[in-house]
Length: 66
Image 1: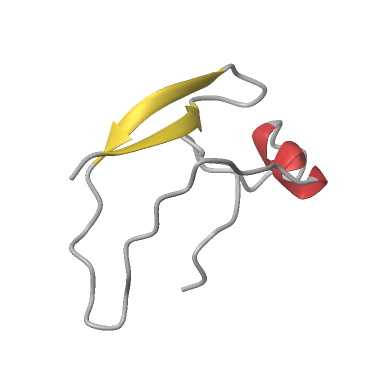
Image 2: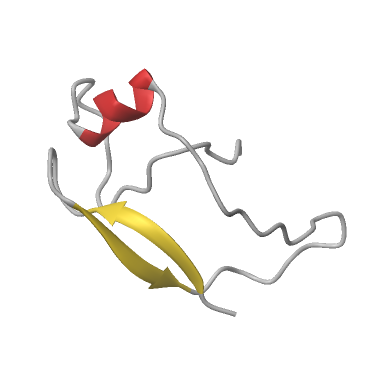
């Protein structure tokens, strides 16, 4: 299943759609379809690499904690 994500390839770069093949779901994970999302101020700082820790390509929005 291909997931479409909006990515940024470099600091302050344009947002572009890109397909991604996610890993298979684990036994306690579910597939959720999103129709809308938002970007917070911290996400905007990550897009522009204000904190010096962004890794590109970057997908703004909520992050899965590891």
